[in-house]
Length: 109
Image (cartoon, rainbow, N blue to C red; front, side, top):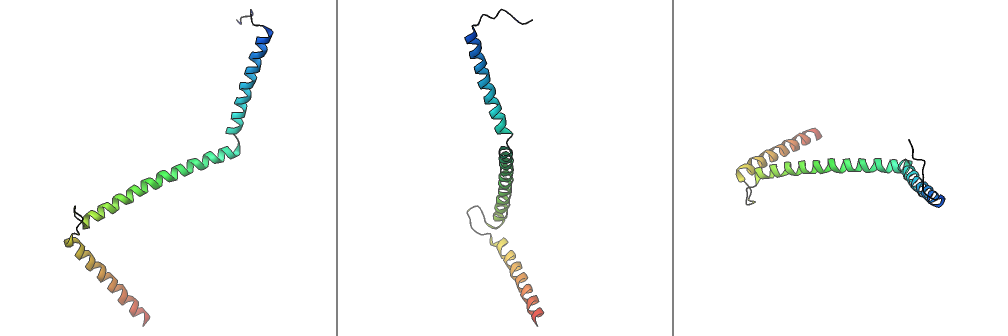
């Protein structure tokens, strides 16, 4: 059961009502901002940008790791090239370029 013996004065009751109205108005304003289409679109954009940044960051780390792995195959710890690995790869590249040049030259004739 509710307590019916309210000892507050009418002025105190009016002050409580005014305070509750102000809090309710603030709550309604906050809800209005949250459900406004611009707010919803802005939140969605921020979420997409965050996901893209996260994905790009992971891709950057992966590519950086791959480049480092490849680099470590051709350069030793001091930064000097490993000729036993560089020379065969260079010969293969020169051979492929030569074959491509010959193929292009034959097509033109």
